[in-house]
Image (cartoon, rainbow, N blue to C red; front, side):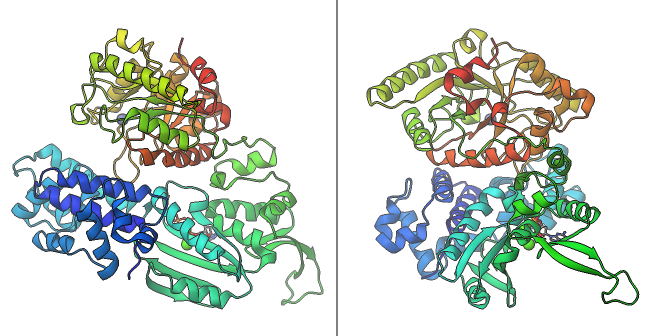
Length: 602
Ligand code: DGT
Ligand code: CA
Ligand code: CA
Ligand code: ZN
């Protein structure tokens, strides 16, 4: 039996979906895609489910029927899915890489392959540079330009993985290491511990008195595709998902120093080391050492020094010895945190698990997968006490957006769900909301009289991404000026690793948010929009001193859930907020529903 992680199974099913879509097979692609998303978000390994209950257990997974269950079984038994192999043979293109390019979907890949023989991203780039794409049916000069932009963006983000892919994998490996008797501690350091939005590789630090046994274990893990190097205390491998993993074993006494070193960032480390030097210390991955001037030392006439260990077991004692407050990993980017720690000015960061509600949730009414009640129950299970239903509006026909009458009808269903939950004794409130489209001219897609009746009006851009910076900024600000607009959803339109933000002046948007009382969203699912830098601007910390008076705008961290499993994404939103120096007070949905609603425009 071969072991595949949920991410890998998900990837294979999603590939089947894309190949089928390429061949214009109806309905099936969506079914595969949905299951792929469900499995990606599943907490329990599918492999473990299968080991316990076989194909029957697989069929318990929402959306999985007999056909898909048998394909997963085949994957576990043979390491392959024959249907996927057949599809690949029929259209031998590098689908995984090509579909990552913004604006290139399965159907255009088929055309590009059949007419121009494009198989890889390099082929596509060449064809676009030579101007051969614009002549194809369904393409033009504009789409050719966009393909080139997409290719250059994909090149920039190549080899990095979204935090949401790397974190569950790293946690699973940490757990497995911790379960061993010879492992005292195992913790993922590096960019993952700093919760950067994308991860180059996973770095795990282990305390153990039997490093060789740990190294053997790591090299032999089922998801290891290749061992790059295996030494006495360090092993580097490539995992089958494409991610690289470094595991290092360190002694207990230098755990803090090693953790600090391997957490980084490199810039933070470099700055700390020079600060240590100024204070007469040496700092490295083994500890913090006090240097004594001592002429009797070794060395050829140079000023040799004797070292005395000052700290190293914990990170806290190292920061303390250097005369500073403890710095949370998410802040360690050398962007002002060291100075703030010295002057006791670090923010009191919003804590994980501290959200009380979620202000962007889609349901079956538009492009979500579940009913209002199902989403409410899932939100409750995720520890929340309120959520706003914010389905798309009519302008967004692809997402089956609602018109005014449908919004009113939905309101009735929300009332009855609230009643039902109350009768059952749950303390949970479903708020009436919308994700109202911002039209080209900055007007909103629903009538003001409809918006006035809602609890939560989110507004967002889903069209005309290519306006100039000035036009886009003015369009969005006009929408923010609507007295009913409470929250600007996913303010820059980007999707991590997939879509660049549209051109927009965020300093102006933040000023307008302050002036109009509009809340800015940190959209957690796939987008991480706002990104850390803009969050920091919104909480003032990232702005030049003279413009800080303008900032201090409120934000909300939302899941943008389209399915019951998506509430897990809130954790990534909190991570991003922490990286943006945000405190609980900056984030409206850390408050109770009554307190939160008071922060909206009057
Ligand atoms: P990544 O993997 O690209 O997402 O980013 P990191 O930060 O995880 O970087 P990585 O994996 O190359 O190294 C892990 C940590 O080790 C890094 O955050 C800081 C530390 N480190 C690596 N190379 C150096 C170095 O040359 N000097 C210093 N001071 N620290 C280093
Ligand atoms: Ca790393
Ligand atoms: Ca590394
Ligand atoms: Zn949206």
